[in-house]
Length: 50
Image 1: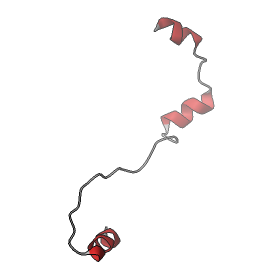
Image 2: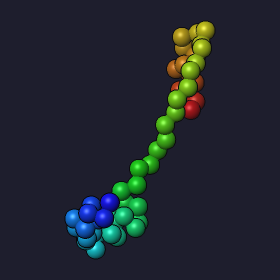
Image 3: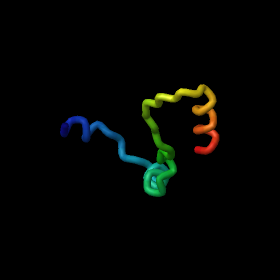
Image 4: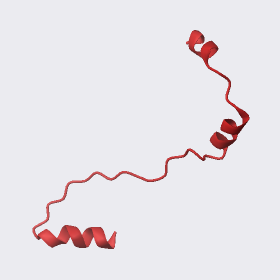
């Protein structure tokens, strides 16, 4: 792992600032679920109120 760190270029001041203020942060979430809906329009209603 040392040889990888030696080859890495130092980060520029601009990039360090962007990383510090989370400019490259990923915002959002993921949702995974299984729904057993009897009515076709129930899914559309559920998504509209969410």
